[in-house]
Amino acid sequence: MINSHWTCYGTEKYFVPNEDKFGFVYIITNTKNGKAYVGCKQYYIGKSKKQSKWQTYMGSSKYLKADIKKIGKKYFTFEVIAEYKNKRSLRYYEMYYQVKWNVLTSTIEGTDEPAFYNSYVGGKFYRPVESYKEPNYLIKQSEVQKSKLIKCKKENGEIVIFKNGKEIREAGYRSSDIRTMARGGYQKSKYNKQGFFIRKKCNDIIKAEFIDNEE
Image 1 (cartoon, one colour):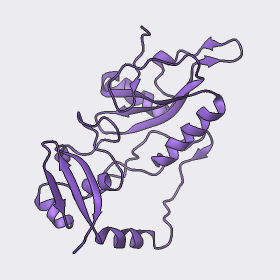
Image 2 (image 1 turned 60 degrees about the horizontal axis):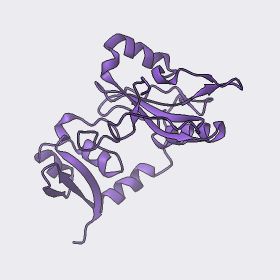
Image 3 (image 1 turned 180 degrees about the horizontal axis):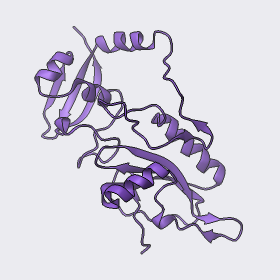
Image 4 (image 1 turned 135 degrees about the vertical axis):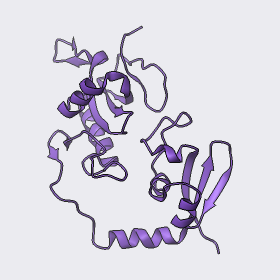
């Protein structure tokens, strides 16, 4: 068995590499605050096929490495998202997941702290110095969400439907967290290992989705 700290994304299964692949895209997550890093690592270096020591690799971000050193490796998860057969595919899908998860602009819920350690995507596109939304983007999103209900499934199987943020808050949850999950986020818990950290206050909600209001 290969001695490494990597597991398969979304599970706790020990990661076993495919020797026919070139490398993998990964996500490293700080379990204390949910801050993560998305990157890629190849198995071999150069034509000599010298092994890259991927087994113990802990990312290329100096900020990530500083936090690992500060609070301890045990507070981080190292997950392989997928393997790819060549450098071209590896680099493309590294950027694909970095863009998909908005690693340069996402913030930790309720703070201005970046949700990712990444400083750039695709190896050259850096964090913007200002935020930007398409004109009327927030208005359009608000209008769409007002016409929707939020259907939530609890870990005990109970289904709850909320009409608005007030009902969510009265039930003891954070409206922003529930809406994040409904927009396609994931509650990272023992029931669902995928996705991102959401405050413990919502831990018994394992799924949320927008549904049409038929009234």
